[in-house]
Image 1 (cartoon, one colour):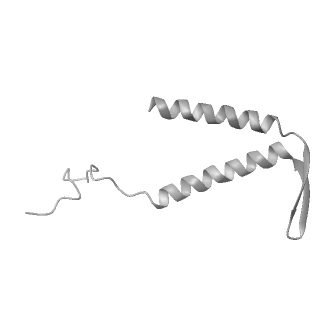
Image 2 (tube, rainbow, N blue to C red; image 1 turned 180 degrees about the vertical axis):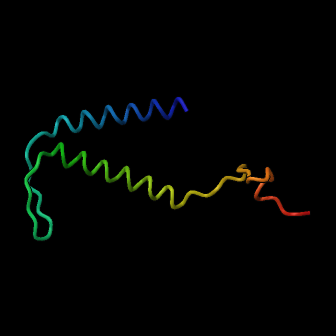
Image 3 (cartoon, rainbow, N blue to C red; image 1 turned 45 degrees about the horizontal axis):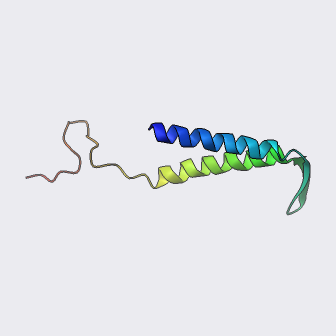
Length: 81
């Protein structure tokens, strides 16, 4: 668990450095829309969308572990004898 926190902190620091170095205004053209915004806003928005998509996809493919116990206290994966 401690290693995950350290890796997460390193990624947050790298993301912050990357975003802070990209402060210029950029033009975004998508289909019929055109908008000018700061690169910081765009990068942060794309990062947020990626994190949310990652959580949704992880939940979709989340399989119950064999150690989960149902309400009656019996392991839900055991075969009746």
